[in-house]
Image 1 (cartoon, rainbow, N blue to C red):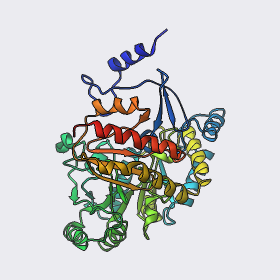
Image 2: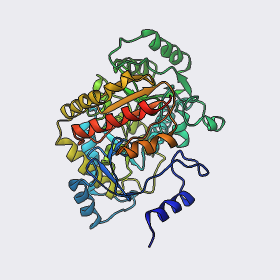
Image 3: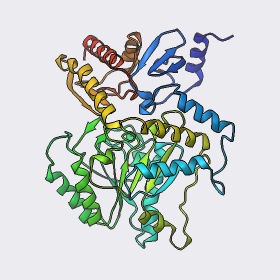
Image 4: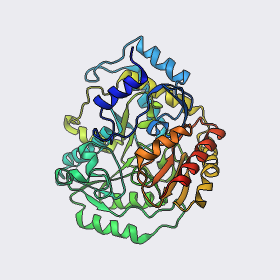
Length: 428
């Protein structure tokens, strides 16, 4: 019988983890079980989860409603192809998504992951303009500091300089990048920023298929919070120059910014919106690309078909998980719950402001960020958090929290104390 040490040795030898070197891997910890907001390791240590497993497990682990939904679907069928077949979980999910997203979004395309949903959005935009007699509209404008996934088209609209994909720059479609929105959720709008985008649109609109952006928060590109009113102005510019507006809500959707969707901080609706991550409460991989009738029927005119069809599109188990997650989510007063979480995180992280290693502390909704003056070494810092009984995974200069919505105040304070202690001991 293998021991935990045997498993970890095999893991190190055989498995390639995300953003990890095979020759100098960062430490990995063997998980035995998880429940609520706690992850239990094979050595018996229990960690308070501050990450929601990359922002997806919003209801906590081993949730009874989620478990029951997946088990019930499993007794019927776990998967059927979506070409030629359909099923109730997918139809019910589409109904629910259309009911809770902006009213103009009336069509749903299901896919396997957030990155693929972005690929779908970009393909939708290009194919739409092709059917409208504008085949030269093949390119996209997007802000720097953005992140939209690790597949090729998604990489092409990620930050070209400071992102994770500069190695592939010569192989990627060359898109047009503008400055990121000026930071500050409550800061006044800077019209010069919008005028610069207007100039780019005016000169290049015949080639631009769409403008893609993470609404309100640029996440992996630096946890940058910006004024939602920029999005109202961007909508007007896209309308003026006949450009589709695409919102990537994969990280911000389902309550993370304090509204059900980041779009809800605005008075407008995108033409295309991508959702994923928390869609299934972190139980299964699933994403969706929603669009309006203009795009969907435009692509479909004269019997045209959209050229995309993932093998596991509309997977019934994943759709059942998503339906259960949305049902649980509907039982929350989401704005009240996330406002409470923001208050707790602000209290928990505010002592870090006193540390010389810290540049800034900021919180918005269910996102808490401690920005350091220098980047951390993940290999060194990750085990320190584990030793303190918390799961926090920093990147670059950022130590941040995106905990499950069901986390307790004491657990948030424990996360804050651990972050303070680890930073105070780091020579940054």
